[in-house]
Image (cartoon, rainbow over all chains, first blue to last red; front, side):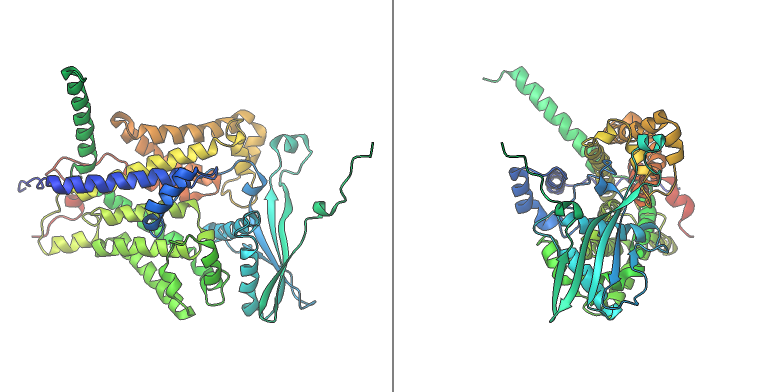
Length: 209
Length: 317
């Protein structure tokens, strides 16, 4: 076997350039992790990241926090799904639920994320209503309709202790995380959100003293 | 005023840091670990890419749910996607098909210097086209693809190598580019594991030992049903919960110690998929297992390239 020669060493200039590039990327990575946390970020981190690193790390899909928490046992960590029903046809079949029973794996997971993002975005003033309107609008053409209702349902697992004590079903329960009617009126998409029932309950005022 | 002893100590520390940095980033590395990462990462990227196929038109089509108007309001102003240019169903299908072909080329190692870059661009493009559909596995695979684009990932176990051998070219030498790519994979493996552990520890369920229950009791995500087991044994549930966090921390820190790096990389190949299975994020687990492969101590001695290349694809003639 012929003896191989070792590769020529890098020149000092090239090594210095690479060192700067790697160090710069590592700083960007650290700022992305610190700046994309679900806990928020400081003004300093946000500003430095958005001015110096986001412009080139975002297009590469590298401006990420990697904070995969898996679960915190909260309602928002449950499995979500979207339910869409057409309203302009009383004889319309059952509502479409996404992900459907035939969807599995990552395809179903993407639908669950879409449903979760729909519910979560309603507490974000900058994104409120965007996804529900878009989802509703997305079915107008293929369904030949201009009036649908949209619900986001989420599955709430039971507390383990309650399941053992028989206070809750092991299968958990389903609650409505979001509901709205989406319709097209004169070419404009209208979103009519349904107020959660508990918010309609009368306020109990303290008795006058 | 600095004494000569202090100056000497400071320069010694600086020299030591410099030597460690140089050894970590610039010692030429053999090609096979990155080649294995290319094959496994390419397969994962293909699987994630394929998960869009059934709903491509529903999401990204001309009348799709995720319209350009929605993206304009949703995405970062710096986000761009090649898929933004597709305004018809045919254009969308062509772009999607081409992207899939590029990822096939990455996986088999065909024209890798070009296809790895194109593959990373295509993958980032589809993620930017529907950011609300993206999961943690997509993030990790995006990182893997960029690292493949940086290193010489086609130097081994590839069509490129086969063609090179057929043309009588000698086996590629260990490369600094490959070493940098492997170094970046290791950095990301540690950061991703560490960030996951930190994010988890913000929640009470990871401290009181019930997180495994909340993961297992979800309706659709889990691929294995462990609720019955966890209902029977609280201690087992606690053990699984604490073991996940413990492993993530040990993995993130231990990768930086030469003595345990190899066993940790091996453990990662087994443990991450199991965590992903329980968490209902199997692709995330698999992607981290691929990162673990990238953390395998590289064959870094110049001139002694790993046997994988010469055994599988010996030079012809």
